[in-house]
Amino acid sequence: MAEGLWTTQVGSLPKSEELLRARSAWARGEISRDELKTLELQATRDWILFQEEIGIDLVVDGEQYRGDMVAYFAEEFSGFVRGGLIRSYGNRYYRKPIAVGPVGRDRPVTLEWWKYAQSLTSRPVKGMLTGPYTIADWSFNEYYDTKEAFVMDLARAVREEAVDLAKAGARFIQIDEPAVSTRPEELPLAARALAVVTEPLHEMGVHTITHICYGEFHRAYPAMLELPVTQIDLEMANSGYDLLELFREHPFTKVLGLGVIDVHSRRVESPEEVEAGVRRALELLPPDRIYVDPDCGLKTRTPEEARAKLRVLVEAVDRVRRDLGIKPSPPR
Image (tube, rainbow, N blue to C red; front, side):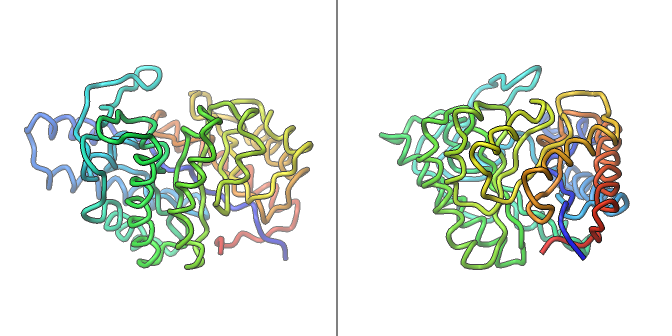
């Protein structure tokens, strides 16, 4: 029987009001780090169990212990200090890191969280990392003479984290590089840095993924196919699946992460429109080269909205699987 059309998520899931209040209280020194971590562990457990309940194939931990995707790693790596608040989009702000010395990794950053998440489920859990190019591009540099030197030092730090995840048993590792789509002219640098991260992972048999969203895809494609990963995860729903038309002219040669849920909209899609998006992708790629997920992380939505959107995603994919005779099975 055929396989494929695996369901997954890009990474982040929303935090509950209780957890958001606790994070603010911790920042003010009103509760201890251990008290906050207890709530983060419970929130991680709740999201893992929800994904199992609805039948997500490739699970994420939901990043309940993280804030911004760049600042989180910069605060854990050496060589950075915290900068001031910068607006990223909408009413979202983050503390833009500042490189003031040689950057590096002194200890594991996500390893224990991945181990905890994987202990809660028999389904594979993705290792989730921010890519070296994106960390550099979304930080200030007050130390390195060139951006390339900054990016390549970060690549070595991210590689250490990725290899530790792989050694612990992570078979799927995602290295997010959304900045690539905003600066397509620097894609060769991003590819060189990503190769530093993924080369040992491929030798270890890891399925490597990068996520790219909300940028100048028409300038970045088909050059993005040179990125040294197994799978490229792309936002599709928000842009009306326009990128699929580029695949007709230049065939997509990777495994595709197909974004079918608009994470910037509060509206919950119908199963019919998600199913239609999946079928459009099947005109160009076979089921075993498609993973189906939201356009991006769902942390900008409420927990209720995220759960409703994910239920629709699974329902739509199940409809297509039944029609094509695809048996649900864990990705390998």
